[in-house]
Length: 275
Image (cartoon, rainbow, N blue to C red; front, side, top):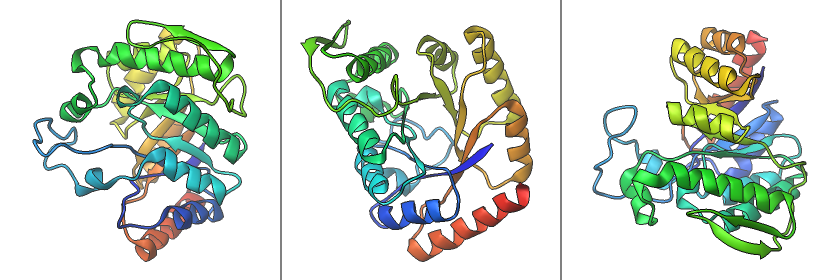
């Protein structure tokens, strides 16, 4: 099982270049970054983990810009959107941004996507919460078409474009891995439908097992399993390994430069001891 780093990159924390270099230097295998375009002040949508919404959600850098900067100063780590809110993104632009990062990085980009939980946020992008699942499905399919065919076309209820040229194409063939986030029956169906992997949150072990069993039974085979924000808990890591996780993105708290580097050192030492 591999160990990467998951984090919220903010405008007042460790800078992206220092972060990416530090992650690679310490032997971690990936950097996964979260996305929120903005946080409406209304706060009608409850924070999924309960309580007040942490301020780190308000200040996230754009994940594609962040990963492009990370790509330029690294050579081995995978670069993961964890997760990109595709229900708030134009699929043609997203396909080009993702393929551009994949090209810059030499084939190290991974597209993690999800349907989102902040209803006010996605409404500001013109997304109807009631149809965001269907919208997400079409945008995933459209991006894959743009990545793999030329000219590409897609005709759906929400996404519709005639034959078009879209370059660059990704380095990895047939396309970069796609990971789908969420914890619902709809997520299970979506992973199976798109022949994708699952990028989970650090759920209780029994719930992880239930979802993995559902995915495996529906797909008829094992699927790639990745986790965003895994805790610093070797017992939990062992349980995740037994469940078949190929990679855990350990949570790096959103902190200033010096504090972040100390935490990365501690995590790297913990991983070394675990191995």
